[in-house]
Length: 326
Ligand SMILES: [Zn+2]
Image (cartoon, rainbow, N blue to C red):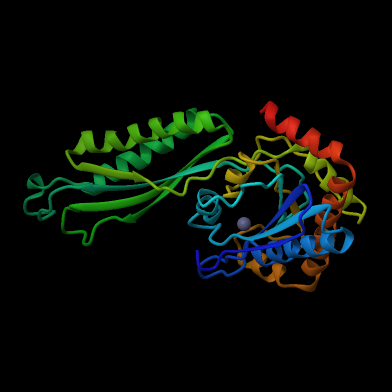
């Protein structure tokens, strides 16, 4: 990818990777604060470099674009970016500091229905209504939602609902996300969600076509050993973490795919504001001086995490052990 990069320093036996993200959201800009992810990861790597000798560690900084849509890290993994990497570190701005936030796996579904156009008043009996098919499917997913585990999500939008009210729609389209914390359950749900869309086709006679996008994200598998090391360091700056159960709300990230392959952390950090991610308020807070202060503390905590891993190799062993145990 044109906007990806890799920077490397040192030749030690331990390879610590820092992941930068820097993409923004359409229309609302840095409403997920990825400007701060990029800077705290780069800062963490620079800090570790200052504290280490080149024969102690190999530091790799990845610039990973297109997190919000496109799953840039998945493409980088496919190109072999994780080869030789022992641990992967990054941190993400949020409302609060959480060391192991729940982050769902997600599969994205594109659907289309083809029907037959007809005059909606003069000859409705001649039409096959592609919008009815999509509405039936939409309602069916909503009803399915009542009977799924609480650590899963289904949501979507209709992107094409027809062209004119006096024409029976012969084409409709929608985009839906299926999310779950458990990869096996996600596969299960995908089958059940698809049944909802088949129901729309069956009931109306419209033809369903669909595709699962190739940018699916795995759930984040937080490495508790590494998350604990990061947390201890962050707490030294007075950062206060809240403890929450794993099955609470969260989003998804392509860091999930990284975390399934190497021991990883993806903690959240507050920036002293009140806004939630993906809002205009968050965009403003991510650009404010208070956010810079938090970002610098997190950068130092990420650097010190690397220092700990160099000087206490048993931590790396424990992290790998936890990872292998699944
Ligand atoms: Zn984000």
